Image (cartoon, rainbow, N blue to C red; front, side, top):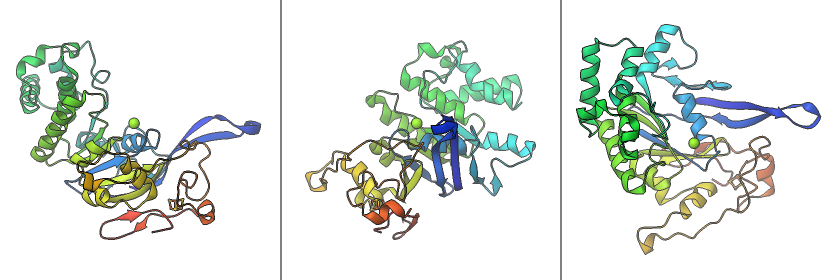
Length: 313
Ligand code: SF4
Ligand code: MG
């Protein structure tokens, strides 16, 4: 992902000039084959918009996403169709993402029908097999979404994302609409499926505990920018960016020895229509100096496999 940017027009400001919401601003990172990259940050930081662009659901305003050597938004229609098969999406809300008027069997076969895969009999077989794989049984094929619990529906959401045997999946808050008691089961299911299908995953979430469970590496976003990327264990052991430090300080530690000083962020997240100058975190950073208002730090290497965007590191 190189220089990825998404701006939305947002009416007009003073004197009728067009205004833009800078949802994602010059974001660059890599996802390696087979890994799970967690993408975290508070709501409105641009993580879902980034996920939507990687899932090919919306187009970037600028920048590039190269998947397996092919640019996602700049391709001939034949490879576009192939790309849509290779990239699966698991949505946040298992209540609204399944059509209530369709039976589960039909919902699961839909991607196969759209891509004209297999005969009717093969599609039915594939849907039944997938139901077994996600821990349900073929009797569910005849049921409607409203007959299922939230956890069961998200099993269907995952099953549907896997019907075309994708190699890469984008999962945007796949467990945050679920009861805490079922979240771990769904994370386990995702991990089983990752192994079985050798999936590469972008896992978008605001929940640091869930992200820690599933991610190999974690990218932290603030106000449309990535401020830190690190292997998951390293990030939790020693967060380097002041924003990451604040985010992690809010998580209760398992053991008293891990207890961190609680860093409370003052003030609101600034508006993405008028992001602050220099380092966009300077309005809330307790280490900010006058230089931070002027100079925008860039993401640069800060130790083995780590990147941080702060003038102090
Ligand atoms: Fe804080 Fe300055 Fe670093 Fe930004 S660049 S995170 S304001 S110390
Ligand atoms: Mg979101």
